Length: 488
Image (tube, rainbow, N blue to C red):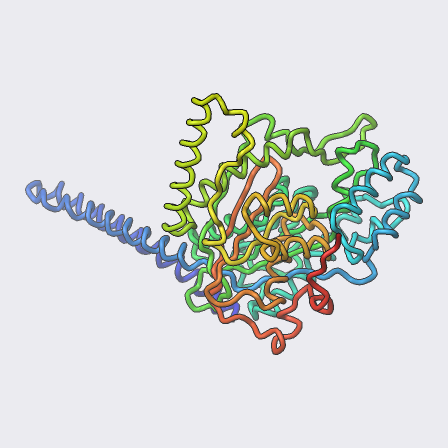
């Protein structure tokens, strides 16, 4: 099968090259005849027609490829039980380490207990040591521990061998070794010589959506059949052992996890989801937004990731711009018309209040929002802790059930950066909620600031959880029956 797919990709690329060469040859011959005969000026139409036909064919091929980008399957790592660290054990670990002062421990204790995180999350082996072993070698071992089991499971479930993969996109924000993480994977699985490797770093929690966009672009632009997107965060080198409270939040929320997704542009390959929409927005040109989240050294020279002042306000402004662009693409016309009417009424009311001198009384009224439940059936949101998830869900007009996947994923696995959105989709599938024809919205927010959305449509018949067993439950195997849990 792998050889057949590789041959197909090479033959398709050769076919496109042959078409281009043929068009060029026709143009040269036509120009030579015009020069030789001197009177057959109508031959000028031949090269023009050849170039127009070639351009039309390539646009049609690219357009059909874009429509056909689909998700074959995905896999989420469930770390080994020995890496589990309950909250009480984590707090004791921090006290015994000797590198946090009392104020830092109290700050992290309060942040962790209010975040909505449960007792079943995982940390990499290096962070179980006292003191933590944040070395390059330990980080490489963590990468192996994350990538290989997730990819093994993906290739097994999809029945697609690694040699059939034409493009690999790996995103990890805080660790960028040489050779790259993508090269580590390509070497392990002996991927073919012409595989296109991309390594994304520093893109934050929205990097998974960026990776899918990059992979989809590669599938559209090249004669490829499959692309893999791997999302993970290497915590070994991201753990902060200083006293700056602005940098301690990463220790409180981020936990071990990894996801791998297989995309295809083939019309014959079975796909579970179709990529309906990709929307990307950034406010990086704004200095306040740019400094909302950044990695730097503290006063003692210890490197950590800082959440800047006013980050909540900057995220709100980013989301307003992002949701406006996204709503134009995915909302049905009826909801667009309703939202436009509400917006006009709101603007008129504010204008009347301003003329009447009552702007103060109306300043607390929030701007109307479209009903995104008219465009998506299921929602996968940034896993930044229970308070932030509830705030974001309320701002989007979502109900408790709509936020269920994000809240339960954070409770069970913590914040796994870009991989969290895939764990949420795995939760929805394990609960049997995603049916054929349903749409799923992935919303990621990352440093920069940037907001990225993917909209998927389920095109395959939903798996029978009872029949599919382990594959249907994914990382939620052995625990899905315990969820949802609601804690006060």
